[in-house]
Length: 436
Image 1 (cartoon, rainbow, N blue to C red):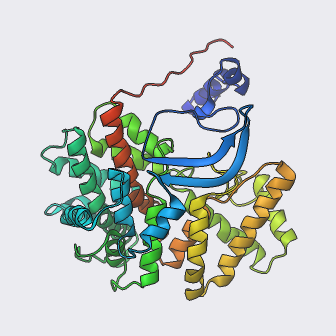
Image 2 (image 1 turned 135 degrees about the vertical axis):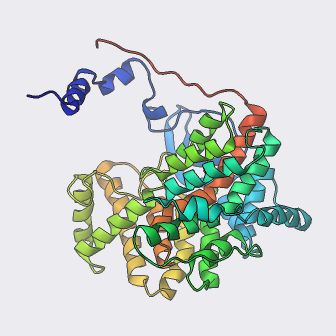
Image 3 (image 1 turned 90 degrees about the vertical axis):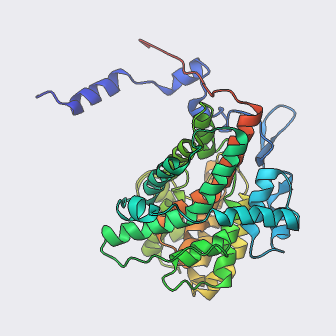
């Protein structure tokens, strides 16, 4: 057989196999996970906490209903407070995550005034760096745009904590325009669709600005604004151990600029096991509904669940997207909040039957795992977020970019915290093995 790179690759793959038992033999944490699936501690933080289990007196893991804390506020309690400010939930959440307390009126005006001054892109930036250079994936385009913003920053390599704060807030403020303009550039140039470019209105909140830039007529309902604002809050942070935030910390710990750190985080978030999961979940559920219909029996749905787990449906991965989590066990609090808030949206969009099918599917998946796998599994926020975005007529191309828009405040806060209190390059070790 003629030698080629395929055969060389396959030969090397077989010769260099690392079997699972070697991870146990050397006590190496595969994927930085403990044997019971929990994550290996990688640092200390005061910003956010994700709680899904407890330990008993024998150090056994006990599943509990999920809790998410931003600073000292549990997410359900925080949402109740933020709902008193329906036009600025996300901005107030950002302030809390960054400064460790909810803002006074004066503090809030100072904070939002700075953000709104940063909404606008540099002169000619949109034409030169976005419209002329579309990308087949908006996430990659956001990365390129941020690297171009580096070139516009006279103090780009000033990595002091204070300057990092200003840089990060400026990036956050510009993301709505970068995301939406990148989307329209893509569909116009690569898909021959209409180009819609609205001017930036710096009198709007971040949620309002995104919707105003996206909608061709710039019209959106108060309910759509409220749901998007809520989603931005729910995605704003998830502790220092989630993949994109950890990536941000690893890269920034080298002393590089925040643009590079954010670009790395976006690359992480793009993956279907992280920020791209809501797209995979939405596609999976479309296929499930096409196969069974809304009026399927429980038995019909259970058969689909078994087929998914047996690599015999959708993408043949053996995964049920939107279920399971590295920390949460009995419930994901973000999912529970979104599910309650989204019901009225489903009714107003005439998609009640679809939403109720999701509810049934969630219930049956959890029951199947409890009965047949003898373990608890919960729906995570990705299970409903893709459906909610679709009900709001937000294109699939923007599902993951909206995650970027929201999570940027978490990346920024952890970046600053690490600079102030750790300031050491992150350098884990890998065990070298040979001939085993």
